[in-house]
Length: 97
View (cartoon, rainbow, N blue to C red):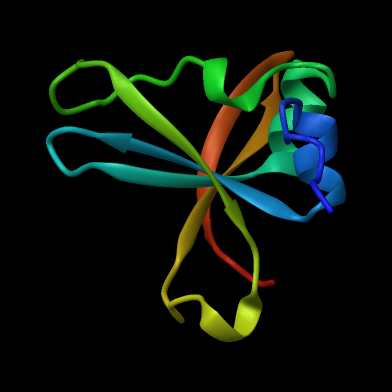
């Protein structure tokens, strides 16, 4: 039985997925799909999101990761949006499945 592709942040959120943004210099960031959906909307394709690398500014590779808390590293850090003074600011926190 084939499954529909996960082509929106809404579908990724229903599957409790993380979005991995990986730069060619080795800089990697993880974001909860639910946090990204609150910022960009549920209909946005997660593979077409634009991320910047603070180190070298190249093109970023985006990957969806299905969350299985028992298989994730204990020190996985994710980036979460906060609204401060009407602007979205991102901060880092430890991932809690």
